[in-house]
Image (cartoon, rainbow, N blue to C red; front, top):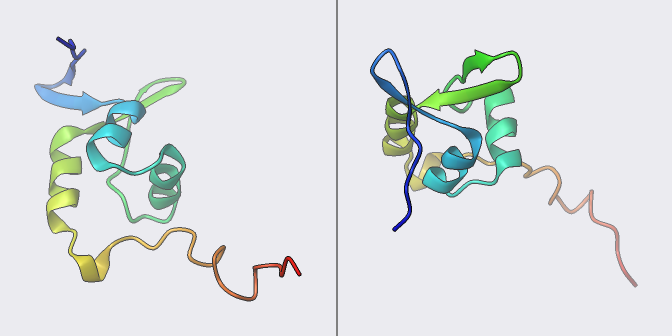
Length: 87
């Protein structure tokens, strides 16, 4: 049985980056890119070198997603003008 460490701040569960990745199914890099673009819930500074996210914010964000408005991070990387032909 896996035991989860739960961090609570002011009675709210705080998810660390690896937990956000597990819950959302996004990669760590995608989480940071979406955060930087303002398309992901704001993180909470836990210390000088640690952040987390409120579980309630992540749950609300995930509930608001619809197939038509899913984040499109890195779409410019896959555009045809960025690809190099391997011929």
